[in-house]
Image (cartoon, rainbow, N blue to C red; front, side, top):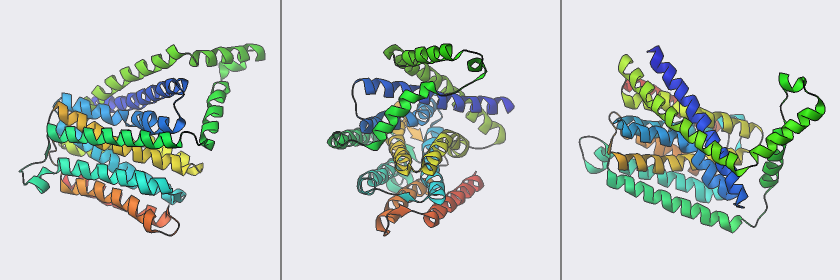
Length: 355
């Protein structure tokens, strides 16, 4: 059992590190082609943050563990929508922008409902068990393509409008190589240290270095995905848990923890819009692309995952959209944030009891 847990944890670390490496490389290349920060955030960054979930889903499908693919997506999205957004609201009330209320959050609800309709065949089709077949997977991918087209089209309309974030990101990007002092730096003369930092910044600015980051990151994603699926599967068998439950809890929470840390940090620093946008975009892509590709590879039988899991995800998506829309100040405050956290706690209790 210790071996399975170790492999699972190492796999999660590789997934996070690989996703960061791919995202950083892709962002650097996109900037060289003068792609706007808004489009980069909506596409490259959102896709990069979803890569761990996508890799686990596809790897689960290839290894014939479909319940793990479905459980990972539902568990990760539910964690992000209920717990992460809830904790963000408790720490610092989130002001939800007009664009988020009128565009992004409704799209999140559409994506969650699409996944529910595709996956809950017992409820909608009267089948004996839930399965996401290839035709449903193709439907999800088509919805994803429409979503990306709509996002890029909307972003192009805003491309000419300068944003404070763009100047901040450019300045921070140029300052990053000059930060950090260690034992080696302390022993170097000031001139040598400055020269080394200048050379390092020059190397990081090369296009080949960005492509190298992408390739290394993809390698880490492949290895990490294998280890996560193998470790989680072995762990489930040894303690008598279903693959779906392990995916809903251990794997999903492990993959979503970076979102929690990143979003809470952004919220504390007052960048709640960026944090909320990243979560919403990632959940949409996760529901549509991860499950869509996986179910095209092999029909995904959900096992013990059923109506309660789907309706929790859909209900959470609806609440996160409707409550800020009807409130006077359009915020996710401490009271609503506490409600979201309690809902997630209740769902986890139900999941553990169900087994």
